[in-house]
Structures are given as structure tokens and as C-alpha cells.
Image (cartoon, rainbow, N blue to C red):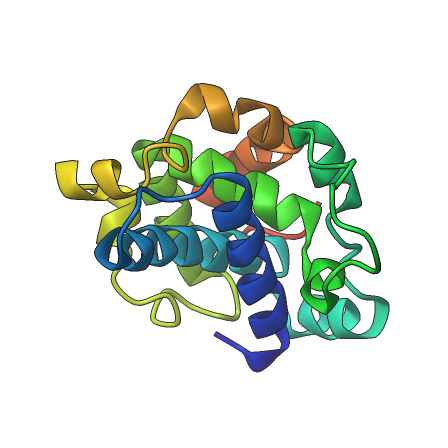
Amino acid sequence: MPSELSPVIAASTRWLLAAFPPAAGPLDDALAEAQARHAATIAAALCYPTALDAGLLVLLGPGGCTGLDAVTGAGTPLRTGPAPAWHAQVDETVVSWAACLLADPDLAALAAACLGATHHGSDGVGDARRLTVPSPRDHRAAPLLRHPDLLGPVADLHRETLLGLLHAGRAGSPGRT
């Protein structure tokens, strides 16, 4: 995966884990993070499929998590002071698409298959088995992160765009919409 997307992937993963925390324990933390990171990586690669798209992301920035926080009810934080710096690196579309992939393993498998049509290729994601064929242990580690009803409001933000992209990806090459 190109380094241009790394900050967005890391911040989007962190936002997902903060909004939908894993079960207690270090192994659960690691398993949930692996699932969220795979989803965010695939979503970012599909959202920014060309080197030009990734370059524009670096130039213009991803937009932050304010809209996502409002959707999940985290828009009125109890803390005072400025938001952590990583909040600015969250991409709403990447998080929404990642939520779609986390909620639907079949959609995740289709998305992973479409990565070959991007300039990132399918090798940059590695084995996304925890995302596409989650085990019962993966589900227990991340019950909130894998729950379709809980992810629904976030996933619904950009679900139609993702579905259109993946449908077009089956017929040809995906592009930013």
C-alpha cells in the first residue's frame, strides 16, 4: 500500500476502534485492530485507486471525523481542548466503506477481489481472511465492530457509492466516484 494512504488508514482504523471498541483483553484488541485495519486498507485503496487520487489526498487532506462523530453521537465529546491530531486524518468515505466491509464478509471478498484493478494491486493488503472469512474468535473479539445494525448508520453514509463502484469493478476497472 502506498505510504500516502498510511495516515488515513491508521486514523480511520483508530476511529473505528474508538467508536466500536473490541472486547476486553490484549488478544481481542489485536484481532479487532487487524479486522479494522484490513477493512480500512481495502476501503482506502478502492476510494483512492490511482497514484493521482492518492496524491490529491495528500494535497487536499481527508476531511476529518466531525461528520462521523455526529452520526455516532460522539459529536459532543466530554473532553475539553482540541481534538487529537489523528482526527484530521480520518476519511469519512473510507470509514463508511470499511464499515460496509466489516458488516458483510461477502461484500468484503468482492471488494478485495476488485483491488487488482487499482494501482495498489491486491498484494498490498495481504491476507484479509479475518475480514472476508471471520472466525467465531474474530467475531467474539470485535462484537461491536462486526455488528451490522450498529455499523449501519456509518455504513449507510456512502454504501451506495461503494456498491456502484464494486458493480462497475466487476465489469471493468474501479475509479473514484
